[in-house]
Image (cartoon, rainbow, N blue to C red; front, side):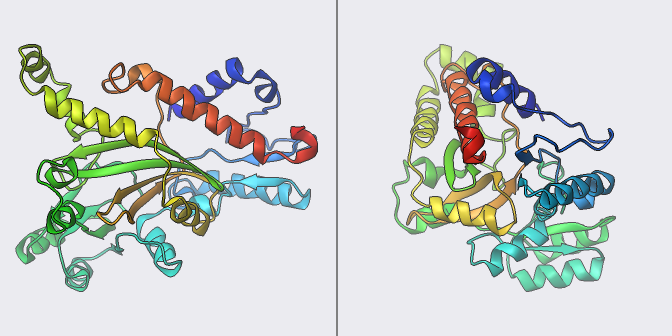
Length: 330
């Protein structure tokens, strides 16, 4: 992910003192010395043990060495192995975190039994991936039978939670973006602190950058229509909601902090939806999240993306500084 390089670049210009203290260890190289190290932070792809077993073994060795020395560790390799979708769902359910139920299925009969058990429409997706590639929506038994026949590797069945339908049932005006479209919010969690990131709307149940309405409105045809005076209202409303969310104080902060901690993590981006009563339904945690340069973000100028990314990076730097042992942070 580009986030690491973007963060380090910002750190060097904004907070050179802490940047000068960083020692970067690339996986696959000889084990690092932990002398003069006060804090170990793992920034690795996940779920770590399942997807990158050699990297997990190396990271676990570093974590054990740090523990013997009494060195604090953030995003422990074991925590980074808890984000496989079904495992994450199980952990959150046991911790009382409001999230979509997920089951991992490996065979066609298991697929059909699990679809029946979940009792409603489901997403079919990879159990160990964050991207939405090849995600399918299964609503009817015949669709489930077809998907089961095509199953060639383990997959995750995610029970769909239609939050848009909740807004409509609650009588929220039809003009509201939350009643018109599906949505997904993202927030960064760094131990006990939370920072809002973005809010996207989509016509699709599974909301992502590739299928959100902002991506659609960024097409040449849509831009031309707006230049002629058409379709300006929708874009303006979406950007206004996104900007307002970025500057909001997240009222359900404790839920997000608890969700990250339950996975054994310290730092992650959480994707979730906001229900009509203000409560949350969590979709997934992304400890290896993408935060590209603001200039490369969609509708960068209109969304003030460059300033927002810098503000997020500065917030992360402040959290990193706060995580340092007091005798070294002072």
